[in-house]
Amino acid sequence: MSKHSHWDKVKRAKGAADRAKAIVGSKMLKLISTAAKSGGGDPVMNFKLRLIMDTAKRSGVTKDAIDRAIAKATGSGAEAEQLETLLYEAYGPGGVAILIECLATNRNKAVAEVKHTLNMGNGTLAGEGAVKWMFQHRGVLRFAKPQNDEFELKAIDAGADDVVYEADGYTVYTGLDNLEKVKNNLAEEVEFAGWQWIPKDRIPVLEAAQGELDALLEALDELEDVNEVYTNAE
Image 1 (tube, helix red, strand yellow):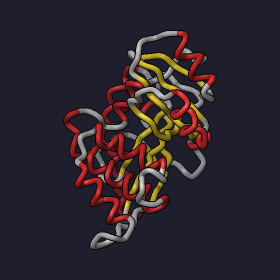
Image 2: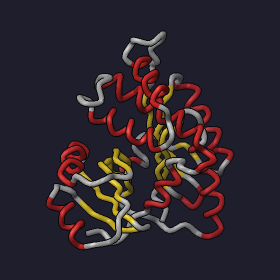
Image 3: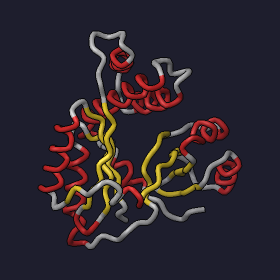
Image 4: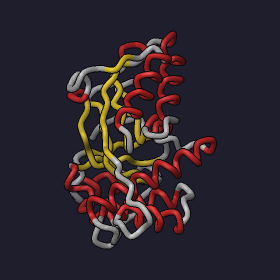
Protein backbone atom coordinates (compact mmCIF):
# COMPACT_ATOMS: atom_id res chain seq x y z
CA MET A 1 0.00 0.00 0.00
CA SER A 2 1.29 3.43 -0.89
CA LYS A 3 3.14 5.28 1.86
CA HIS A 4 2.52 8.83 0.69
CA SER A 5 -0.23 11.04 -0.54
CA HIS A 6 -0.94 14.75 -0.34
CA TRP A 7 -4.44 15.19 1.05
CA ASP A 8 -3.68 18.57 2.64
CA LYS A 9 -2.74 19.98 -0.77
CA VAL A 10 -5.76 18.36 -2.40
CA LYS A 11 -8.00 20.02 0.18
CA ARG A 12 -6.29 23.34 -0.42
CA ALA A 13 -6.72 22.95 -4.17
CA LYS A 14 -10.43 22.33 -3.63
CA GLY A 15 -10.72 25.75 -2.01
CA ALA A 16 -12.21 24.42 1.22
CA ALA A 17 -10.96 27.27 3.42
CA ASP A 18 -13.53 29.51 5.07
CA ARG A 19 -12.43 32.50 3.01
CA ALA A 20 -13.56 30.70 -0.15
CA LYS A 21 -17.03 29.49 0.90
CA ALA A 22 -18.80 31.59 -1.71
CA ILE A 23 -16.45 30.35 -4.44
CA VAL A 24 -16.89 26.75 -3.31
CA GLY A 25 -20.68 27.13 -3.35
CA SER A 26 -20.64 28.50 -6.87
CA LYS A 27 -18.40 25.68 -8.10
CA MET A 28 -20.50 23.02 -6.39
CA LEU A 29 -23.64 24.32 -8.12
CA LYS A 30 -21.89 24.16 -11.49
CA LEU A 31 -20.87 20.55 -10.82
CA ILE A 32 -24.44 19.72 -9.80
CA SER A 33 -25.77 21.27 -13.02
CA THR A 34 -23.30 19.32 -15.15
CA ALA A 35 -24.03 16.01 -13.41
CA ALA A 36 -27.80 16.53 -13.65
CA LYS A 37 -27.61 17.47 -17.32
CA SER A 38 -25.58 14.39 -18.25
CA GLY A 39 -27.20 11.80 -16.01
CA GLY A 40 -30.61 13.14 -15.03
CA GLY A 41 -31.87 15.10 -12.06
CA ASP A 42 -32.77 12.16 -9.80
CA PRO A 43 -29.90 11.55 -7.33
CA VAL A 44 -31.20 8.06 -6.59
CA MET A 45 -30.55 7.06 -10.19
CA ASN A 46 -27.54 9.36 -10.77
CA PHE A 47 -24.60 8.32 -8.58
CA LYS A 48 -22.36 11.20 -9.68
CA LEU A 49 -25.06 13.76 -8.88
CA ARG A 50 -25.63 12.15 -5.48
CA LEU A 51 -21.93 12.39 -4.60
CA ILE A 52 -21.69 16.03 -5.61
CA MET A 53 -24.87 16.91 -3.72
CA ASP A 54 -23.44 15.33 -0.56
CA THR A 55 -20.21 17.32 -0.95
CA ALA A 56 -22.16 20.52 -1.62
CA LYS A 57 -24.27 20.07 1.51
CA ARG A 58 -21.13 19.55 3.61
CA SER A 59 -19.77 22.77 2.09
CA GLY A 60 -22.83 24.69 3.26
CA VAL A 61 -24.78 24.89 -0.02
CA THR A 62 -28.51 25.12 0.71
CA LYS A 63 -31.10 22.60 -0.51
CA ASP A 64 -32.97 25.37 -2.35
CA ALA A 65 -29.83 26.34 -4.28
CA ILE A 66 -29.18 22.69 -5.17
CA ASP A 67 -32.77 22.17 -6.35
CA ARG A 68 -32.59 25.32 -8.52
CA ALA A 69 -29.33 24.13 -10.12
CA ILE A 70 -30.86 20.76 -10.96
CA ALA A 71 -34.02 22.35 -12.37
CA LYS A 72 -31.96 24.72 -14.48
CA ALA A 73 -29.84 21.90 -15.88
CA THR A 74 -32.74 19.60 -16.67
CA GLY A 75 -34.73 22.30 -18.43
CA SER A 76 -37.47 22.72 -15.85
CA GLY A 77 -36.08 26.08 -14.76
CA ALA A 78 -36.34 29.41 -16.55
CA GLU A 79 -33.14 28.89 -18.54
CA ALA A 80 -31.04 25.76 -18.95
CA GLU A 81 -27.39 26.60 -18.41
CA GLN A 82 -24.95 25.30 -21.04
CA LEU A 83 -21.77 24.36 -19.20
CA GLU A 84 -18.70 22.93 -20.95
CA THR A 85 -16.02 20.87 -19.21
CA LEU A 86 -12.51 22.03 -20.16
CA LEU A 87 -9.09 20.74 -19.14
CA TYR A 88 -6.02 22.98 -19.52
CA GLU A 89 -2.42 21.87 -19.11
CA ALA A 90 0.30 24.15 -17.76
CA TYR A 91 3.68 24.48 -16.12
CA GLY A 92 4.19 26.48 -12.95
CA PRO A 93 7.15 27.84 -10.98
CA GLY A 94 9.85 25.24 -10.43
CA GLY A 95 8.74 23.26 -13.49
CA VAL A 96 5.68 21.88 -11.71
CA ALA A 97 3.01 20.27 -13.93
CA ILE A 98 -0.51 21.67 -13.48
CA LEU A 99 -3.90 20.44 -14.67
CA ILE A 100 -6.68 23.03 -14.57
CA GLU A 101 -10.23 21.71 -14.80
CA CYS A 102 -12.89 24.26 -15.77
CA LEU A 103 -16.67 24.35 -16.03
CA ALA A 104 -17.55 27.30 -18.22
CA THR A 105 -20.31 28.80 -20.32
CA ASN A 106 -17.77 30.74 -22.39
CA ARG A 107 -14.67 28.83 -23.53
CA ASN A 108 -12.87 31.96 -24.77
CA LYS A 109 -13.36 33.77 -21.45
CA ALA A 110 -12.18 30.75 -19.46
CA VAL A 111 -8.96 30.22 -21.40
CA ALA A 112 -8.18 33.96 -21.43
CA GLU A 113 -8.49 34.19 -17.64
CA VAL A 114 -6.47 31.02 -17.08
CA LYS A 115 -3.72 32.18 -19.42
CA HIS A 116 -3.58 35.65 -17.84
CA THR A 117 -3.37 34.19 -14.33
CA LEU A 118 -0.60 31.80 -15.39
CA ASN A 119 1.38 34.63 -16.98
CA MET A 120 1.02 36.79 -13.87
CA GLY A 121 2.19 33.91 -11.67
CA ASN A 122 5.26 32.87 -13.70
CA GLY A 123 3.44 29.94 -15.27
CA THR A 124 2.84 28.97 -18.89
CA LEU A 125 -0.01 27.30 -20.73
CA ALA A 126 1.15 24.03 -22.30
CA GLY A 127 0.01 22.20 -25.41
CA GLU A 128 -2.50 19.36 -25.32
CA GLY A 129 -0.90 16.20 -23.96
CA ALA A 130 2.20 17.92 -22.56
CA VAL A 131 1.14 17.46 -18.92
CA LYS A 132 -1.89 15.17 -18.82
CA TRP A 133 0.21 12.02 -19.27
CA MET A 134 1.81 12.70 -15.87
CA PHE A 135 -1.54 12.15 -14.11
CA GLN A 136 -4.08 9.37 -13.71
CA HIS A 137 -7.83 10.00 -13.50
CA ARG A 138 -9.00 8.01 -10.48
CA GLY A 139 -11.84 7.57 -8.05
CA VAL A 140 -11.05 9.00 -4.61
CA LEU A 141 -12.66 8.36 -1.22
CA ARG A 142 -11.57 10.14 1.94
CA PHE A 143 -12.32 8.78 5.43
CA ALA A 144 -11.56 10.70 8.64
CA LYS A 145 -10.56 7.84 10.92
CA PRO A 146 -7.54 6.67 12.92
CA GLN A 147 -4.95 4.38 11.37
CA ASN A 148 -5.66 0.67 11.64
CA ASP A 149 -4.75 -2.37 9.59
CA GLU A 150 -8.30 -3.71 9.63
CA PHE A 151 -9.65 -0.77 7.61
CA GLU A 152 -6.84 -1.03 5.06
CA LEU A 153 -7.57 -4.71 4.47
CA LYS A 154 -11.31 -4.00 4.32
CA ALA A 155 -10.75 -1.33 1.64
CA ILE A 156 -8.64 -3.67 -0.49
CA ASP A 157 -11.25 -6.42 -0.13
CA ALA A 158 -13.90 -3.87 -1.18
CA GLY A 159 -12.08 -3.38 -4.48
CA ALA A 160 -9.77 -0.41 -3.80
CA ASP A 161 -6.62 -0.05 -5.92
CA ASP A 162 -4.63 1.70 -3.19
CA VAL A 163 -5.04 2.89 0.41
CA VAL A 164 -3.07 5.78 1.92
CA TYR A 165 -3.02 7.08 5.49
CA GLU A 166 -2.14 10.70 6.19
CA ALA A 167 -3.41 13.81 7.94
CA ASP A 168 -5.58 11.86 10.41
CA GLY A 169 -7.45 9.90 7.79
CA TYR A 170 -7.43 7.50 4.87
CA THR A 171 -7.51 8.23 1.16
CA VAL A 172 -8.76 5.28 -0.87
CA TYR A 173 -8.12 5.19 -4.63
CA THR A 174 -10.30 3.26 -7.07
CA GLY A 175 -10.77 2.82 -10.79
CA LEU A 176 -13.04 5.40 -12.45
CA ASP A 177 -15.91 2.95 -12.83
CA ASN A 178 -15.36 1.27 -9.47
CA LEU A 179 -15.95 4.20 -7.10
CA GLU A 180 -19.61 3.48 -6.36
CA LYS A 181 -18.95 -0.22 -5.74
CA VAL A 182 -16.05 0.44 -3.33
CA LYS A 183 -17.99 3.15 -1.48
CA ASN A 184 -20.99 0.88 -1.05
CA ASN A 185 -18.88 -2.12 -0.02
CA LEU A 186 -17.07 -0.11 2.66
CA ALA A 187 -20.36 1.25 4.05
CA GLU A 188 -18.60 3.83 6.24
CA GLU A 189 -19.09 7.57 6.66
CA VAL A 190 -17.12 9.29 3.92
CA GLU A 191 -15.60 12.77 4.10
CA PHE A 192 -15.15 13.11 0.33
CA ALA A 193 -16.03 11.00 -2.70
CA GLY A 194 -15.34 11.92 -6.30
CA TRP A 195 -13.01 11.69 -9.28
CA GLN A 196 -9.64 13.48 -9.38
CA TRP A 197 -6.45 13.70 -11.43
CA ILE A 198 -3.70 12.09 -9.35
CA PRO A 199 -0.02 12.58 -10.32
CA LYS A 200 1.91 9.43 -11.13
CA ASP A 201 5.01 10.89 -9.46
CA ARG A 202 5.72 13.93 -7.30
CA ILE A 203 8.57 16.37 -7.85
CA PRO A 204 10.26 18.46 -5.14
CA VAL A 205 9.90 22.25 -5.31
CA LEU A 206 12.77 24.49 -4.35
CA GLU A 207 12.04 26.73 -1.37
CA ALA A 208 12.61 29.81 -3.53
CA ALA A 209 9.77 28.77 -5.86
CA GLN A 210 7.32 27.41 -3.27
CA GLY A 211 5.72 30.73 -2.31
CA GLU A 212 5.29 31.71 -5.94
CA LEU A 213 3.73 28.33 -6.74
CA ASP A 214 1.32 28.54 -3.81
CA ALA A 215 0.22 32.02 -4.89
CA LEU A 216 -0.38 30.84 -8.47
CA LEU A 217 -2.42 27.81 -7.40
CA GLU A 218 -4.53 29.99 -5.12
CA ALA A 219 -5.11 32.57 -7.88
CA LEU A 220 -6.16 29.84 -10.33
CA ASP A 221 -8.48 28.24 -7.80
CA GLU A 222 -10.26 31.56 -7.23
CA LEU A 223 -11.17 32.00 -10.91
CA GLU A 224 -14.91 31.70 -11.44
CA ASP A 225 -14.66 29.06 -14.18
CA VAL A 226 -11.98 26.92 -12.52
CA ASN A 227 -13.36 23.87 -10.76
CA GLU A 228 -10.20 22.01 -9.73
CA VAL A 229 -6.43 22.56 -9.83
CA TYR A 230 -4.03 19.61 -9.64
CA THR A 231 -0.24 19.57 -9.51
CA ASN A 232 2.59 17.05 -9.22
CA ALA A 233 4.39 19.11 -6.58
CA GLU A 234 5.49 17.40 -3.38
